[in-house]
Length: 166
Image (cartoon, rainbow, N blue to C red; front, top):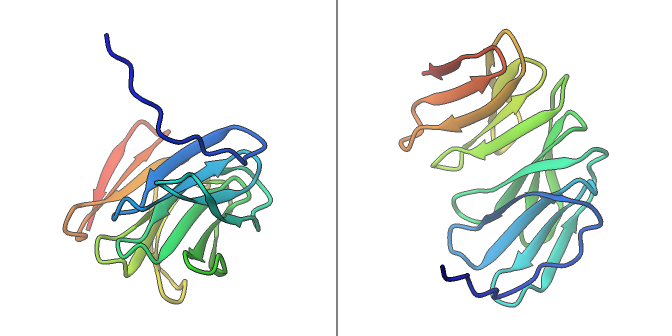
């Protein structure tokens, strides 16, 4: 069995890294950590580009917008936050009544989807943070995602169901 060749080590988090993902162009990586931060990295050099550090709980998921200009973070502090990739500035805070477990941008980048332990998934306007739709379950929602064309949402819950929504 062959082993992969390590290219870069991303050092800087003080606690466990929970999630990491590439930007669509492959030039950057964002990581989420129990140290209550997300960090943006140059994927080629491993150089830290910015630290996103306004969360007060573990950051468990991260996502890039399709145009690579924004990052979304999901945290156990009951919020998702949207950040400007170039400045590291927080643009929006999306509140929940329970920890946020998943965050995703729609394929066109106009909406954001969050999944929460408050038994809901929520669809938000990605420009102004207005809540557009709430999808209710009978227990914590662990996952939420968009169909490839952005016209449907799928949610997965501790209530033993996955549900498709228009």
